[in-house]
Amino acid sequence: MATAAGQKAGHVALVTGAFQGIGFAIATQLARARPDFHVLVGSRDLARGEEAVAQLKADGVANVGVLHLDIDDIGFGNGINGGAQSSITTAADTVAKTYGGLDVLVNNAGMAFKGFNVDVARATLATHYYGPKNVTTYFLPLIRDYGRVVNVSSRAGLLSKLSSDALKQAFTREDLTREELDTLADKFVSDVAKDTFTAEGWPSTTYGVSKIAVNALTRIVAREEAKNTSRKGVLINACCPEADVAVYLALLPHDSHYNGLFFAKRQQIDY
Image (cartoon, rainbow, N blue to C red; front, side):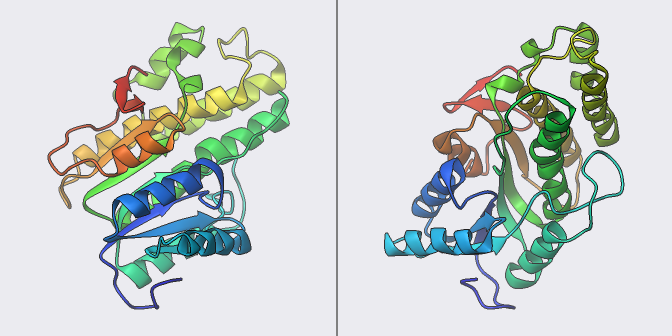
């Protein structure tokens, strides 16, 4: 990493899945926009992350480093994303010890899953919902005053994709908890396994359902943070997979009140 262990950086940002694609673009734009930030390129493949950082430095972007982080590599012993604790907790410990905290977290990492069956549903929810949820669980305590959390989502996760009013109401309840959201995610996987997903009001897109869950998670965490008296000014929002809007939300000014919202092209749109 660019900063030696024990040395505290100024402002620190982490972009997950940043060794390529949209994540790389977000990290690049963020580092260029804010030279006072140290931008961590989160990468499940350390070698590819190091290559991405080397490319950025060759292009004159010096304020970057790599952080080994596989968002699938953790387990709470419940939900559909079981496994041994490893990468996320280790990465969070590294950031805490090396930088003393975090100012921006962009949950971008994801994978493309083809097909539609229970295995694809399980894998998609594990990566696109449980992954960001687990990263947020461990990194949110590190966020400093006026920190920003950005969840890269999609219009594919708008509530209009659900044909069931009951499901729409379930996902938008003002008192919805993280545990209840897990139950909804698991229900989708179960309904796909039983081939009852259409009757239950789910769409035939595992990606879309995973993003519906991410959007609901964004609202839950934003609501929780608004009640957090241990720090001030922290905002959590979601956006379409566009580098510009993700950076825009990551750098919202201190007097911004956007919280728990969804954006596309820097414009708020309804969930």
